[in-house]
Length: 102
Image (cartoon, rainbow, N blue to C red; front, side):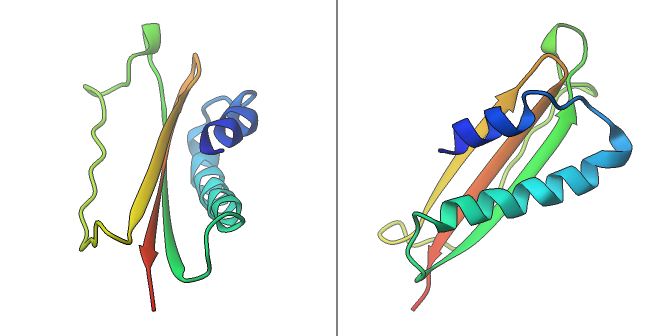
């Protein structure tokens, strides 16, 4: 679901530094709304989106990019999903964390 969404939403998008902030915010809200359609209300969703420009031959500038996250986690009830979309010009990584909340 996340893969299909990012592919369809970003296939015609090029990199533009001034518009990236708004695009990332919109993508985050759209991904969260999409996941909410299949996720029970007892789960709190946290969505992060990172978008950047790819250089020549699909390389990320400035030596690459590493994304990491850390949180308190209950492996029996909490879960997450992530997908990275790449085109000739951009990459976009979306992470969704579903944390059980009583």
